[in-house]
Image 1 (tube, rainbow, N blue to C red):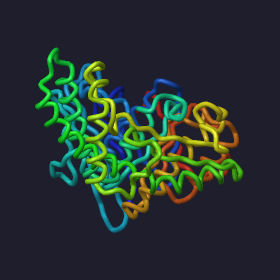
Image 2 (cartoon, helix red, strand yellow):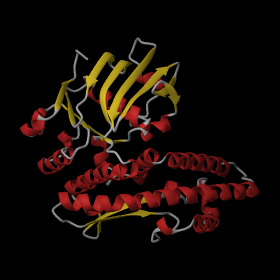
Image 3 (cartoon, helix red, strand yellow):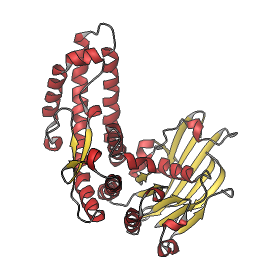
Image 4 (cartoon, rainbow, N blue to C red):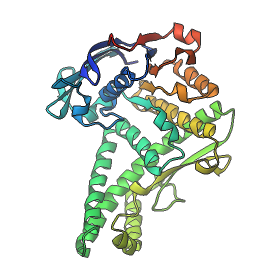
Length: 365
């Protein structure tokens, strides 16, 4: 199993210089709030996922008063030794793997990561865009081609929306964009639907284990046809249906000046006992769904890459009740490298702490 052994930070966020040695199983970053624990999590995510959940501008990752920043991760396992680096300078981020330039999208091919933050706990009850983003963020790591599909489709929709916002849109040009959007949207929809089908079984199994057999169901809901499972459809079939829907909604789109159907309007629906979890599930049930989703990503990424991902948990233990904390600690015992931040070691059983690498984060770092 490939693991991160060491993380070095140079002028990264609040760190002037810092070296953090990570355990091969569990590492707990312990310290008061605002000491930089989340900055370490962000560095680890950047070097594995190639992106940051904070979506910062490069200058925001450079320590105040410094002109540049750098983070390095040393990884070992499966007979491999890999060094990954991110440099931030002149308003740009550049990446290297074993001393050779690479793209951010290349990094998950080395080691994927799954991130869990307190904000994620509201994924079920908040807007559909959060659920789409969760699926897309995982998809980009799981398959580089997924990221290309998403980027190309987003550009096509943006161009089409700009045309719709014109006072007198050229309808022949709009038809040309219909064809581009429908083809790209069909490819993205199929990728999403097939990815979620693979996640679904893991989510349901983990949820049932945590919730003592309670029944959870979940499905990908397309704006093209909410009742259709597109995972087995062909791209031509989806493209043709997409074009049909665009034609049907042409008048509405011209009035509202935006594209009203497509993957940018899709959702993921969860039901507990047959009832919509957004409206009827308790807060505890909703949080268990999110916990199961994150654990499912760990399981599926293992299937895809053949190695366990890096699990990053940023201060989530303080947001979970005792039952869900126990479920999480049981999960991280299962041979997966995990980095957890906390201001309170009391959330962890003593036997777990004894086998963990506990790293104080504060002024010395």
